[in-house]
Image (cartoon, rainbow, N blue to C red; front, side, top):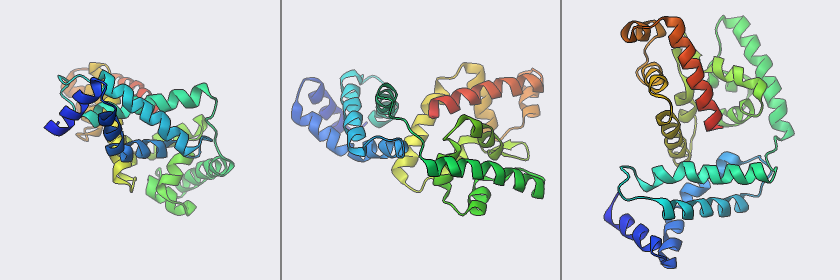
Length: 239
């Protein structure tokens, strides 16, 4: 963290309203990038930005300079949590009809491509077949529990997991990509040590389950079970 940011946070923690306002202004892009994750959820974007700003103020109050992280890294999951609580408590999370319809179309198209090609289509292939952008398809896939299994299949390719890394690469907006990466790191870091180790080996080092099993000294079935549990946790916390 650079000295200027450190000084501004210290001033804000002492009650300097000008410093608080400046921090919010300089992080407005970050807040908006998080707000965009919740579009099509039935809440006004300006309202969500205000909730995100409240979350940022809470981050300022709680941020410890001894943390070995950038302020934005610390702030992202807290801002997201504040917005999620607001949506949950106010019952504002809604799925639009177009997303529901695309959700259904995606399920059938995925099955058709699987039968035709003998393998699950990639996210890009599925999006092209449906004639939609990848980010729109991702929203549809995440719109309901029934489609989560399609998510799991889409992110597999000949035994090598594409997983959330492929999802992050689909974002055109650099700020949104940064938010997703920070959020993913937070979620992975919070996993139990054995789950975190296997996820990193599988999806960041591109290792097979058999390879991991041999190195760790457990069966491939055990690796698969641990991996599945970790992926479910990540999907739930990234939603």
